[in-house]
Image (cartoon, rainbow over all chains, first blue to last red; front, side, top):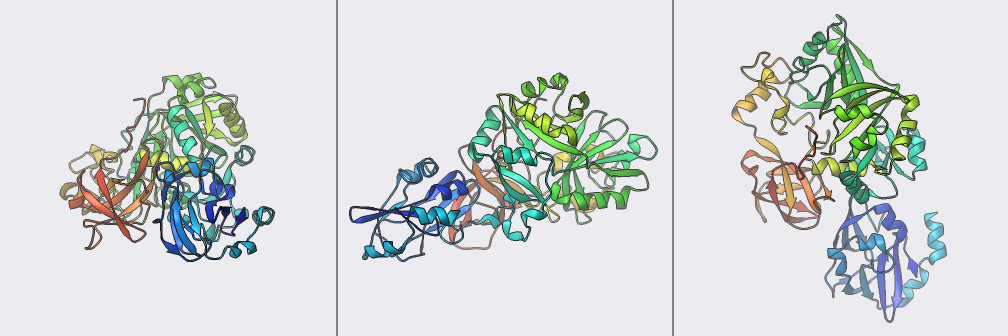
Length: 119
Length: 399
């Protein structure tokens, strides 16, 4: 699993990358009550806002961690946003991306580096 | 969480702002500070205090627990003030206070409490507060963020007739929820006889408690002023009762919003009149046009004028059509496409007990009727919402 400084995790599954937010992020945000997902098939660039989430506290944006195409979104979250809090690194994933160049993942933090990052 | 997950905490004043330049070190702490830390609370700056925004259970569970059982809140940051009449006759303090609030204080019986508002010369609201008649003096509870200004205001205007004493050696707890009476009665059996808005002093192991049957959640419950030395012990004794769980500021906000109660600084302020805010129920007959002590409070012309002729805008409830909350600051439109704003959201959150988002807003008077369809601009999109009566959830008071 790879991590960004924006508290997203990326996991390679076959030729796709699954993206979600870390347990640390989910805990900081508090209970999620609303998730707005992007269209499947949308091409995005790194740092583009792709998901809107609302917790009991505030609205937040989740940005694309890398360039690529959104090929699948986790529709279950629309009816059950709490899944993100319950299982942030499993059933609470947000979207799957197809990347042109998988080597961009190489420079990202691994778990050890991320845990150090959040102190 | 700076870039990817971009928090918009600045739009949510109930949660304090890290960005306001207040270092946590400069903040005041309540008597229960260590207990909050021991309970695993997440602390945030709020009105100059370091306060628990949530405990490990989280806002949603805390909210639902308070509605189902009993929740304990530390509200020691609020201001506690005694108005003591120099004459010794409490009616002199009541009449003096009536010069600052559009409320019948003289008619407030001993052992009773009433909601009140300090108004300004324009008819706006300087603060909302509770006033209790405790026999030989009046006891006021005011908002934390306003307390210094409120006390200065009281001293500037009432010093001829009253001593204005800020109480700094007492904490303030709230115990709210359907099991609040049973829980508190295990320690203080006397509370069983109290009705909504009764106040009573009871001597206990924790010192003399000043108890009122009131709160800020729409639930039955109590607010308890306790000497500082007994505060932590009282809180721990209450938390030892199975029904009682600690509740942070996060759930306090969603609870009060479901109950349709105003948050000062959001839903009422110096520019909103009591009429616009829908608080005319707090202006008793004696202070209205034709009453025994008509007017005589700051802004009376404008407030009584609006009561006669109507206000240009009104505070309303708003139910968004979708699942996304419409938060404070969102502009409201009559039309999905064009036009000028007809109002603005002043509070918005997800309501755990009603299982949907909810907002309070000010809208022009012709758009205030329940059932009116409006659109809120959220992230550049106009999303539909319906004007509804407040509260979103009926109150459960013990009358």
